[in-house]
Amino acid sequence: MFSIFPRFIVFPIHLTLQMISLAFWAISITLFGLVKFILPFSFITKPTNVILNFMMCAFGICSVSLIKCMNKVELDYAIEGELSKNEWYLIVANHLSWLDIILLTDFAAGKIPAPKFFLKKELIWLPFVGLGAWALDMPFMQRYNKAFLQKNPHLEGKDIATTKKSCEKFRQLPTTVINFVEGNRFTPEKQQLKQSAFINLLPPKAGGIAFTLATMGELFTSVLDITIIYPETNGSPMMAMLNGRLKKVIIRVNVHPVTDEIVGDYFKDEKFKLGFQEWLNSIWQNKDKLITELKGTK
Image (tube, rainbow, N blue to C red; front, side):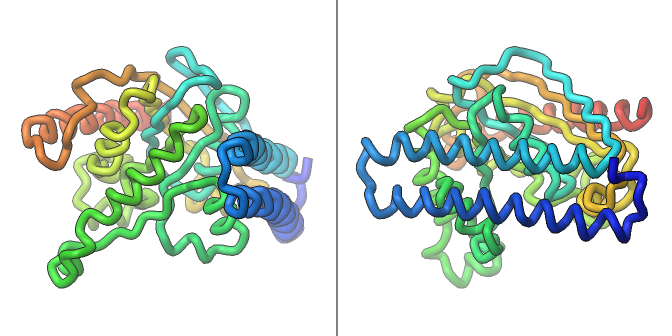
């Protein structure tokens, strides 16, 4: 167990191994993505997407295997409800670290379809990650503030159009769509800046997930409410993991049915919009209580 060694030994070894794994799977995924791009025929793209999804999950499994090797870590997972690899899911999760993405990818393997993440447009330039995400048909979102949209009104709604285009691709195979609805990783500083009403969370943003449900509502079997916490980690979970000092990860999954009450026109139906915000805030309130409870029983 490498965690017994000093951090200055564990960190460079672990970082190097994780980067090799990331590079290997990202390059492999990109190569298959290029095949799909050059030969955009259904008899090519469908089997290629199956291979790409397998590789995505394999990356998560390899990365978490390295984490277990380098850290004396307890993974505490619990699921309330039934899951299937042959259904479509929408995941709403809190966001604490880049490590969340690795853990959720590993969690999906063998339980649910390979996950697709909504990514910030800037991440397309991130080495290995950007091209790999492109090959996996993950949507890159460009967010504009109100002041910018007032000067450039023609760009209003462009992020929604990107969501719709990406969701159409997700219809080809059972898919898990993951949305970190807080929009940013949680920190106490961001919590204060946004004047969050929650102790452990940032306020959820309802528009993107409401639009995804409206676009694919008839396909989604369930909404998976996933809570991630690192109860014995102070500071960055990613750095704790790379240093061999990650002690415990808790993931809790609640399965919610997709009903008519959460599928509708969020942007034109004011009554539906208010009802949807109430539904999402209720999930966030319960999540906030759960995190407080789990931290108290660490």
